Image (cartoon, rainbow, N blue to C red; front, side, top):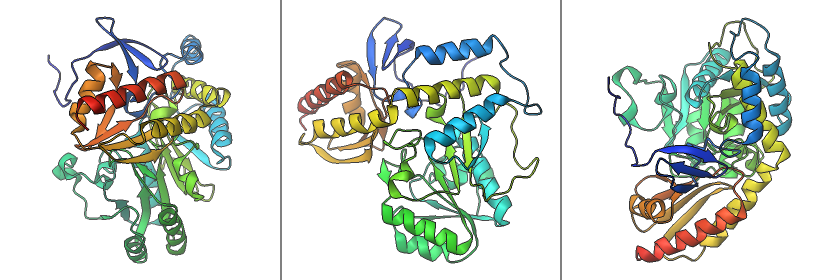
Length: 378
């Protein structure tokens, strides 16, 4: 049997990782400035993370959600304290798409409404409902077509008001920093208008924090930069540091009913142990604060490089618009300077390094970035 070839693969296979570094089969070392799509938050193979997963696996790795699992309660308490949402409730699942799927269903259950308002450029996942609020028809199969979804441009306050005042929306879903959409940052005004209009119309505000959340922006959630609170918050990626964990944080004003949401594997003993270990490290090592400091250092370090058209983002979610195709730029960074980076669009370099990245790594990236820009005639 062969693999179903749906991925465009780099000619590189990592076989070992530690901290902010990867090693391929030939023993070549790479610095990781992409974190596997923003997944690696506390660094690869962190000793505390490895220890807690191994320890839990030696006890019990899985049983169904039909029994008490005190690790779920421990994780909920930690996340509430770290995020400032300690009065919210937690639902655990397996991925970001599943988190958004459940968030949208929950908003519809609660309001009794069918329509959802999403943003142009949004990416919320590939599952049946999440893909309908993703602004990419190319990944929507005919079965996914849904006439109950509307889109407005991010940061268009007038369009947002006009749509929400129709009074028919169950939810508006926003990535406060769009990742796949090009590291586009929602303005404070836009988020405040969204909150005000949702309150006025009885609509739920969902913040998708799957890529920009969990400390990456320099606050626990990126929407917290705007002073706005969401009714429902979705998380994944960084919460598990590579172990599949998704989560939905839910306002205390939204009632739970037995059976309205469910999952087989979500919130397993092993998943909770992984997520608790990540939360321990984020807190004890001050990684939210580190993300802000290192992000500012990166942006300051590349300032003035010719050929940069724009730099966007907060903390360690950064988009750099280049005057040359990002694929060519990334290839030089990877093959000559052994630095892994990401992309979004044809000309935008996307940086999502582990939150524990240090000054040494940042300085190495800045030097390599400048050298690559010079080599490419930027």
